[in-house]
Image (cartoon, rainbow, N blue to C red; front, side, top):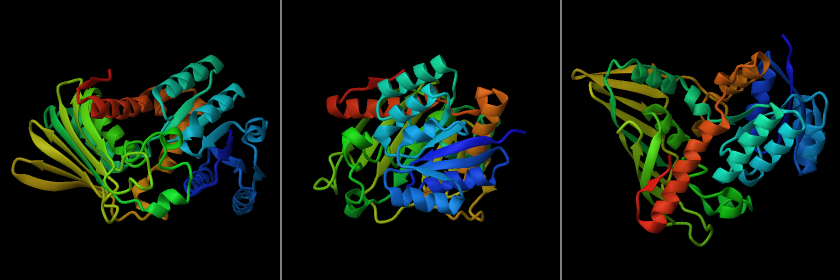
Amino acid sequence: MKRLGAAIIGCGSIHGVHADAIEASELGRLICVVDIVEERARASAAKYGCRWYVDYLEAISDDEVDVVHICTPHYLHASMAIEAVRAGKHVLVEKPVAISISQAQEMVQESKKHGRYIGVCFQNRFNLEAQKAKEIIDSGKIGAVKGIKGVVTWFRTKEYYAQSGWRGRFATEGGGVLINQAIHTLDLMQWLGGGVKAVRGNVSTYLLGDVIEVEDTANAILFFKNGTRGIFYATNCYTTNSPVEIEIDCEKGRLRIYDGTLIMEQDNSCRCIVNEKVRDTPYKSYWGKSHAVLINEFYQAVLSGNPTLIISVEEAMESLKIIDGIYKSSSTGNVININ
């Protein structure tokens, strides 16, 4: 089987997860890396035995490159993805897909126009506990979903924002805790619950207002298309990065995703369905453990021409719509229809 040539744009901390996954895959090989800081590009290229560039346009014009991984600051995602598909490359972009709905819509248009795929890294959908929860919900064996709770209590320091000038600004990050830290949780909630139609929420900056212009805390009620109601809370004001908690309340039981486990409560009993806590990861724990699975699925989609294996821009836009709705609701006090 053909191995797809890959380029990674952006040599920050997350790029190593992508590079290692490509190297471990039988479907891909790393051709080049790109970073505007030459030292970082050189170091990555030396580690992975590939070419390096400081200009991403050189990478997307490289004839050996079939797939471009975009691991850059948020505000660059859309423009780089569009340039890549125009150059005939398939694209896998880190979250968020873009910093506005209009940018994401343009990405959809350009990918269709040029016949190329754009996939989005919502890798936590591939975590075993999330996959099993989805399977149980879809089977109906614990009845219809009545409610979903999502809680993210993390922390970010002043130094975290100071070391990267693009963070903490609406123009370059697109928001705060919602679009950067909690977007994976919002994606899982809407994916497990069947899609959100309206939101009512609030955003605040409680702790880091002297450093950032974006929110460090958000809460919302999510109104799902099927009548399910969700509650959501996220903050960067805690003292540690606690495991994300998602609880799904169903007619005949309850599912709880927490720290790599899936617990099912039913008929006055409680049992562990999945326990992934024992599976170590060399990366930050809150990145999840499934980048490699997602990347392999994307490569299979490119090779087979089967887009159902991809988390598409259209799917990824659902979390952007929720975030946009929370901002609008916070400023107006109203329930905001998003679909």
